[in-house]
Length: 163
Image (cartoon, rainbow, N blue to C red; front, side):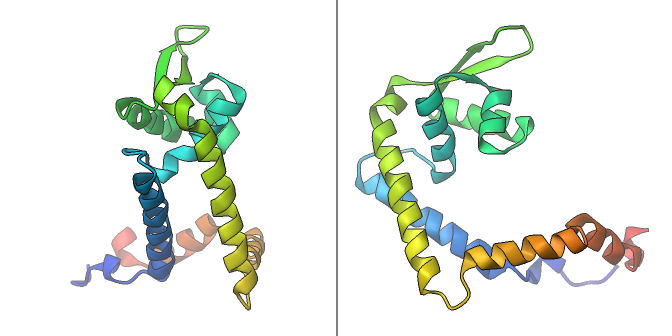
């Protein structure tokens, strides 16, 4: 075991910090618009529910491209904050998620913010000499050549602490 903290070095820390700063700016937009308690990471799900109506957690997870487990946790947080309500689904194993009146009242504003945010991101992307959309495509191509999992496993095979 080494005596250094491996979390002190993170190649993509600047990317994580950038994402956090952008999310904080979106949260400020909500606060300034008198929409307290709304987290930017919930907006996609709230818009989906507004556009498509109540869904089971599995349906909502599929609609936003997340796992059932991740969505279940997110729905619990959104329910605690008063943005969604849940009720028993068509069978005993499912829950249906629906917007609360509080969320319904601001759903149009959320869609407007989403469009404005996407336009702002596209504007920034156009200003870059190497757009982020291209970076993502290049990373996806690299991962098709060798998966992230395979890369991690290869590194772990050379690390005695993993044994």
